[in-house]
Image 1 (cartoon, helix red, strand yellow):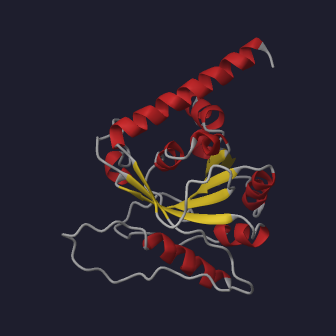
Image 2 (cartoon, helix red, strand yellow):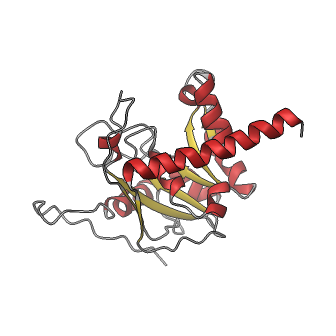
Image 3 (cartoon, helix red, strand yellow):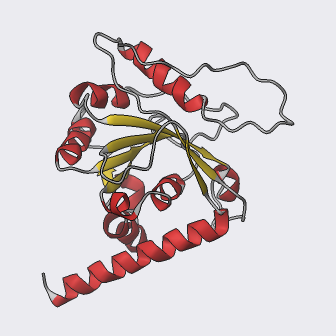
Length: 232
C-alpha cells in the first residue's frame, strides 16, 4: 500500500469513529438485543425499516467493533456516488455495497453482489422495503431480494432490526439533525423454511420486524402482530 493509500485508510477509520460518535451524541441510540446476542463472530444479514439515509449508521454504530469492521450496508449507488464526500463516506468509511438501481442495472445483479459479499465473510445491512418510507404506513411491502438471498445462502442468520425515531431526527430534505433519542431493537434470527413460498416468507419477515416496534404505554391498543415462529 502506498503512503497516500495508507493515509486515506487512516482518514476513513478516523471519519468512521467521528461519525459514530456524532450519531450517538445526537440520538443517544440504545441497542436492545431482544432475541439475539451481539455475537461479534457471527455472520448475519440485518434487515431493517428504512426512513432515512442515516438508518444504517445507527445499526452500525451499536455493533461490537469487530463486527463493525465486517458489516457492510447495502445502499443505492446513484446516491452514494453523487459527489466526492458521499463517495468517500459510502465507499471508504463504511465500505458500502453499492447497488445500481437505474439505467444499466441487470436483474439479479444485486443478489449476486450480496451473495459474493457473504461468501467473502461479510455481514450485511439491508432494507427490504427498497426505498425510504415517507408514508404513514409502519412498513412498505417487502421486495423479493430478501427471499432470494435467503434461498441462496440459507445458513446465514437473518436478523430483523427496528429503528425507532430516526425519521424525526433526520427527515427527508433535512441537513441539520434534531437531537432525539433513538432505539435499535434486534429480534430473533429467521431462516427460510424448506419449501416456504416467497410470499409466505416475506410476510413472516415483515411481521417479525413489525413485532419489534416499541409501543409507549400511552398509545392506543394496536392490532397485535404475533412474533413469527420458524417452521421446523
